[in-house]
Length: 101
Image 1 (tube, rainbow, N blue to C red):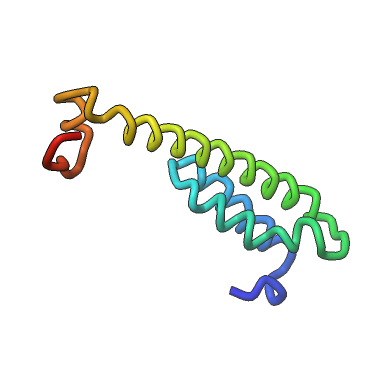
Image 2 (image 1 turned 30 degrees about the vertical axis):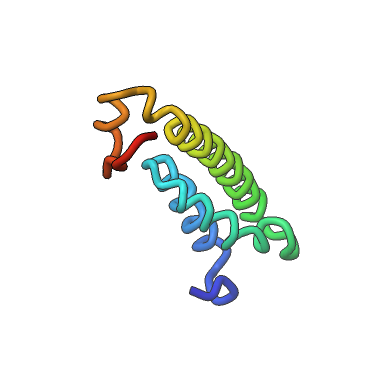
């Protein structure tokens, strides 16, 4: 979709949908929202809906940053401690690596 051909009201509606969709454990939508609407929020000439779009983009960026921190922390902890957790680590693994950890 070319955002230049869409009305400002529709841009705001779409940005709001991506922002709310991120709360459904879909942080990828926040990433899309930040990249897709960054230009509209911060670089485009001012228009009435821009303030709301800017707030949705900023909130999406904060939510995305939070998810990146949480997932990076979990992956780091899991990768370094899985073997120490014994059976629990094996149950949490999709595939159980063979050999000595």
